[in-house]
Length: 355
Image (cartoon, rainbow, N blue to C red; front, side, top):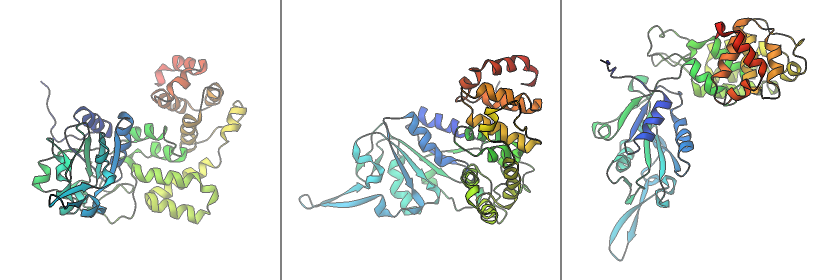
């Protein structure tokens, strides 16, 4: 008999599947700051190309941003017409994200309640398309950032606690989304930077969000994406500006450690040099430099360069050869590229014990 684990968290991918499978329900995605809840609108839109999308920043709304009264002098009545940003006037299905709903003012939340109804959802006096989807986001009450939800609101929604992605999950995403190799390598070497303050033994973790500490910045999927943009333009910045910006993005502890990875990266051969002469191009020394080269290669390699890079990779320590093979083989966008090279297929067959 299966034991049901009540109170279990879900991943963002699982949350998306739930929303798509039961679009009539209204799910509230709760989780600590910066873990990617807001990105779900883009994910759902990709699965529903015939739907319009509406991003609603609930805490920054006034009542007039939702609907306004329009007077009919002939009938001596008033009707409420919704703001165009909700797109319900188009008569098409809409995926609506009520972002940070739990931080909204009570009058705003009350005015949005008709959108949360399963039977005849509406906004103002306009019914929404029956195929529309509405979901909400917010932080956990324990996060200490001002989230609240009264009983009459809770009774209209299904709360889901969204887990922070693991280092492995985030790396898989980062490899397909243009994140700097230095940042990916740092996460691979410091996986506890993707831990949660709710986990045992993480109360003193210097990298992560902790509501019991005074913090200006911390590591999260959102802040890693921002620091990646900074790292990519480091050649345009002086050292003091670079470190200040990195500290502002991910906090002092993470910025200090990432700076070491940037120094590693600046000593590595260029991708062009590696592909041009894989037999003699400099091989990185140490875990940090090796990780940067491996994850940078996964992001850059194509069918034309795959065999050349495998010739270069053969000069690495076995653990880094395996790291490359494992991560590229489980990446849906890179699998075909990897196996287009006979040299990669031969390596996999000869090194099954490392995989």
